[in-house]
Image (cartoon, rainbow, N blue to C red; front, side, top):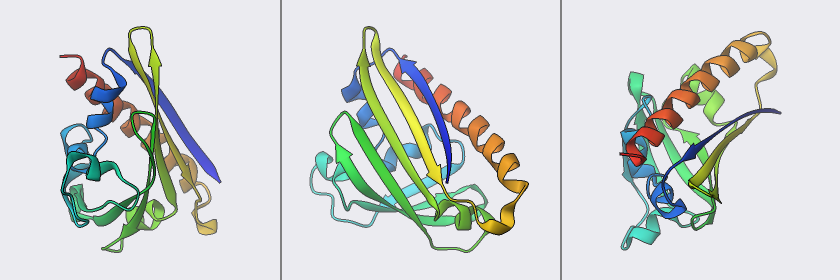
Length: 152
């Protein structure tokens, strides 16, 4: 099992950071995400964060996945699992990943940790290291963009 973990301190409250973690907000700060649309019932804003909430997501390159919330503690932690709708190298890896955001109040705002736990297929070998580095860089860019948006 592999792990990628990055964190960033954001000069915004955990509540403001939490708002940006809804599946329909990812495309605002994740460069690889084009769009998302909830497929579960969303009657209130809180429904976007409840366990079982799902969205169809389209990534750059027209890769399509469903994301489902599997754990949610308001303003503290949220965890997602993915299921591929289109088959590609990227989606085969995403299906073996759990994405987790952990929010911690700090003196000047929020420390946001982003943790990806993944299981690389046995056949991946050396590609796992390259994919790991590429994912870390993309994660750093996304967190930097999120920080920039929230600190305006």
